[in-house]
Amino acid sequence: MTAADIDADRAAVGQVLAGDVSAFEAIVRRWQGPLVNLAYRFCRDRARAEEMAQEVFLRAYRALGQWRRDAAFSTWLFALAANLYRTELRRNPPPAVALDRVAEPRDWRSEDGGFEEQEIAGNVRQLVASMPAKYRDALVLYYFHDMDILGAAHSLGISEGTMKARLSRGRELLRRKMSAPAGPRTREEL
Image (tube, rainbow, N blue to C red):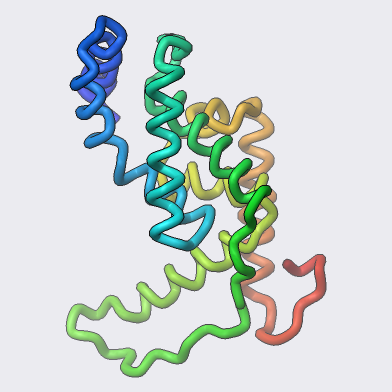
C-alpha cells in the first residue's frame, strides 16, 4: 500500500464524516475485492463471502467515527472484517474441507505451463483453510493478503510477537500436513 492509497482512504473517510455519504462508494470500490477474497478464504463459498463483505461495509459505515487515525484504514477495516468473519463462522460453520480428495489433473501439460502450480496452490489453500483459526487467520492475512506482520497483528488484535509465533507455528503445521501421507489423519495431524 502506498502513501497515496493511505491518503485516499483518509480523504474518503473525512468526506463521509463531513456528511458526503457518496464518498463511501470510493471505499467500497477500493476494498470490496480484498474483503470478499478474505471472506472466501474463511468460508469457501463465494455467495456467502459476498454477503459477509457487505456486512463489513455496513458495520464500517456505522463505526467510521471510531477509526483512530494512528493505524492505516485498511488495518482497521481488515480487523473489523476478520472479527465479523470469525463470529459468523462460529455461528454457522462452513462444511468440512475434504483434504484426502485431491483431484488428479487431466493433463499436466497446460498451454501456459502453470497447471501444476495452480493445483499445488489450490491444495495449499485447502490445507490452510483446514487449520485452527488462530494459525489460519495469521497465514491468510500475511501471505494471501500481503499484510506486514504489524498490520496483520493489529487486524487480529494480537501483539507482534504473538503474530510471529502464530506464523511460525502455522508454517510448521502446514509443512507437516503437506508431507503427511494421504488417507485418514489423526486429530494432531490436522
